[in-house]
Image (cartoon, rainbow, N blue to C red):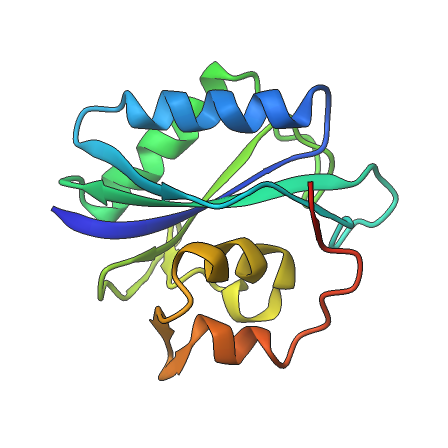
Length: 157
């Protein structure tokens, strides 16, 4: 088994219920076991800011899947839950990002690990720090990276 970390987000409909459904669906994927879940956090939109607030969270999963197979499983869960990709950083029912997989370093057209924006996004790092504050990314812990970021508007839901 390999430890991986996922980011969850929703800003349409019943956001909390959608995150709960995503966790349930992910836990039902063969080769994936949910090890830890952060609280949900209310966060302001990032990138395209003309939209409703998000609920974001993080999951630690133990998996036998390769990083690419884990990504495909996450995309399949998004599709089953009704995700439609209309515009980059736009509103979404559910978003599931593969943030980090053990010591995997991947950079191709489908997947970048660790996630390319992980070190810039407090809305991802706040929930991740709750379940993995000592996770090392690029030589620094999640907690140390987060200490430098603006967390304005990020509050437990």
